[in-house]
Length: 161
Image (cartoon, rainbow, N blue to C red; front, side, top):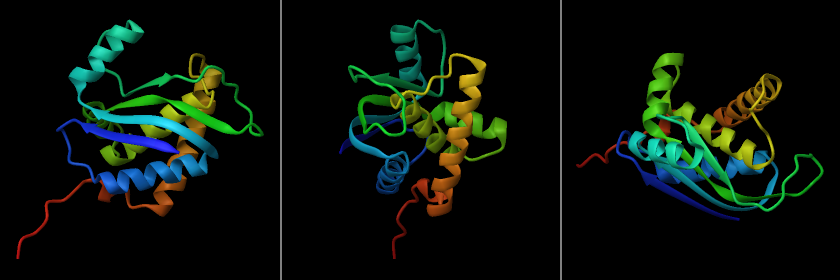
């Protein structure tokens, strides 16, 4: 597996070592066997540019996924090989966390799960597909939350003696 994590936002400090461990656990839970992934934490101006340039949508969004695989079909018995990029908007995570009374840490893990679900073939274009995808996101978020303290994703400054 080749997963590159990039933090290009300054909205929140993130413990990148824990983020990497959570990402690896999520990919394992999703039975991803091989991956070439770029996962980017970005601020609102960058996600707005991507959203407008590549999707033709105005304004911000929570997560954008680019699938670079040539062919994909969703089935549980096919080896899962991913090739793509996931852009997660930290500003949107903070806003959504306030709106839904959760934490920005759980929001970014949810967005990561959402992006990977897209890469393995899930779609959210129609109501039924959206519900199925949301159930999968919720299940994955619960699994990860049982193993990791998501609050610790908020990197703390080191204390000096």
